[in-house]
Image 1 (cartoon, rainbow, N blue to C red):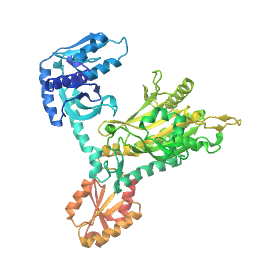
Image 2 (cartoon, one colour):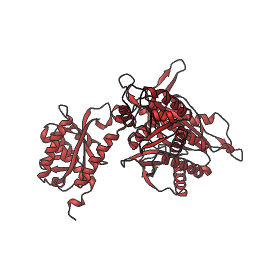
Image 3 (cartoon, rainbow, N blue to C red):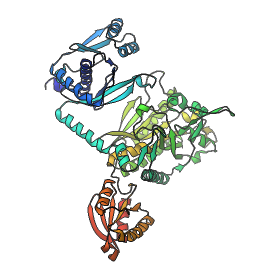
Length: 583
């Protein structure tokens, strides 16, 4: 195997980020460099330009990158003492690199990587020379605040991708093209599901049109029905909560930066917050009633709209919004019930994910990080109990999992379900979390068999996570062509001429009465156009109605996935549609 074949994707992408930065430095003298890390499927570099960079400028940068790669410049590591390194980047007039050096721990080796006349502060690693970098493509530009803070300067972020072979690059770019066709923001508009009216309503707040609301309702009704069948009790806990409750639970300390500003009740001297999470409210609801061990497990579920002040630059269609609806549940149980409740929640999650077509998923055991003074509540005993209980429950239920330190919630470990969509992209969807800490903080109690007060364990559980984000994932999973049971409009009735409208309307009434979402397209358009538009709207079934249907009291059925199925009685059609809906 030659040396180039041994280069890892990480090294290739890291080095290609440097290659891009060198190309930029040669084309735009005086540019300031921030950071340029490899990321999943590619790399980016944040830069400060004296004048705005445009998407069309990427072709010139990419051409210069290929020229530099052709020079086959050795990529050489250099190490410097802190004072020397700082003076060096100051002389280069690179203020962001000065700030990065100032952040490095005392005693850490400070390294640079040089390729020709260009040099950059970097830990590495890299490939041996620019000649190894052959299969890359610049993708797009975006804005990015320095260090992710809106208080800092907005930089220009250039994204690119790099691969080991030409075929891998081709395959990836092909997947990107398919992803553009499936983009939920594009399809959501085309299918009349949702819009954003940022100037009038505000950023990150989606507005759902009738078809979009029907889709939401169908999704939530399905999960509600499943949860009810599994013994969950649905509650509602409002939109406003006293700020003090979040201070008591620990959320204020960990989530204050994503909470909307307080609303002050001056007369009462109380601050209220728009609710960013449900758990303190559900635990407070639990505390309003007396509970014995016979009441447990108690499962509170709620479809609650929550509000989080996400940064403007991080908002992204439905997958990152400021108003989100969570299918949240909190299970109050004893320690002895953790395993059985985990098993029940696991069964429910598997049923729902299968129904939605997500059968390729893995489970991550998200654990506490070990860094001192981090976000995690300092209670080693409770953390150990919670982690051991969750790990044991997963093993007992034959769940294959991998461990990820540093990914836990601040109050406990999590089992996170990561599902792959039709394009092979991975999304975190469901979660089950074990919490020994918040119930104690908020004073949750029940009476045990010996009439002694005990603190329940709480399992936090979400099936689809948030309605908005999951809907965005679903739109892209199905490319907008939803299965029959889920489609916001299941059946389009298309009368051939005006004289067939009355019959179409009568059939539609019967279909609606049978529980199907059917509508008559009575527009003054040619039949061919109405059929094409129904296909573009990805409606699962069309009924084309003409003279023969009226005479024989039939409907002519055309299914999106199968084509024409011929004429049949309405009773037979309803039986067929029922079969598809319940499949």
